[in-house]
Length: 417
Image 1 (cartoon, rainbow, N blue to C red):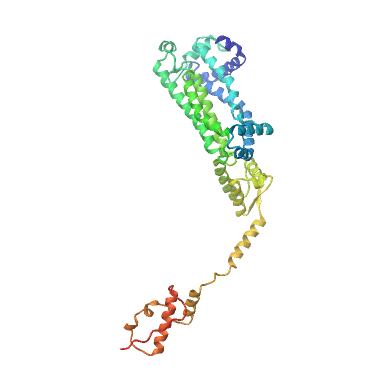
Image 2 (image 1 turned 90 degrees about the vertical axis):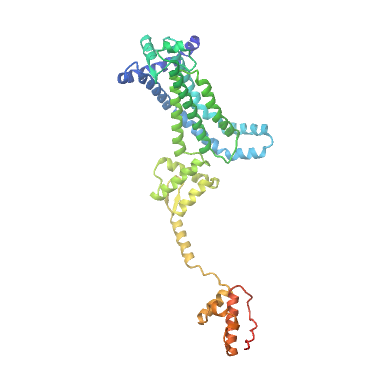
């Protein structure tokens, strides 16, 4: 192990130097031998590394967007060779090569962190073995061995024996409880980060081998961390838990402000953007203008959410421009005014014959109630034949209105007493 560490001294020495510099700052505040001083030094190392990796993260986002632009072509290949998986994979790889995209670009931040993770592991392992490494001399080595996080030494592992843990002034129970909790938190944060990516920020309309790989990694990575985490020192668990939390927060920010086209996150973002633009009548930030510019440039290739967004702006009398700005559209306002005027000028619906007959009866002052006309004629007093005929005609019209056979009805004979 010493031989391997010496081969990678070009990275272990800078990592140990950074930890020592942060320790000198936090040691002046919390005390040089406290777990806070050494633990916060490791956390600060993570933050520094992740800030340096932001350019790689931006490159990862751009590569992901490039993969999204290939989704229609991927779908065609998938449908064309749906019964030949081998040919489908070959055509996919050919498409990646022609367009210069790499589906493994999402792993760049993890690969870039690997050397620092390896260096920190050997630094903490040397502290546990009572060996100096990099710029950590004997005085700093003794101070690091005294540092405890919630009762567990920085260099202790879940698999350490009771004698080794006692040599670090701790108990085996404290070490295993602290390491078990940190391993569970580390695995859960990794799972949640990957699940959030798959459920909210992926275009689910196209199924590709890349998506299947990401879905598999969502379950595989947490298991890997749980299995190998029992062999990590407490300091390394602090490092990896911190970087998982950073990744989760960074991804939540990207999903909220720059979602993948066609994903559920884009639908939520465009809904918020539509309300904001309708309220203020313009796009208020560079990021919003970039999103609107990309949607306008797509033209007829817009997805369902993007078409809904553009149509919503048009209904509000606004128009998205090619540069990402939004202006008031006079043509849209004129069209809305003409549509409103057309509704006012709209002719009433044509009435049915029974409705027209009912209107004629009301205009002539004839009774429209069915109460008297529907009475049995035997119960009515005898009268002139004309009066009976008039009542019979009124009853006929009433029955025609209630859905019976229309037209002239044969009058009934007057009843005889």
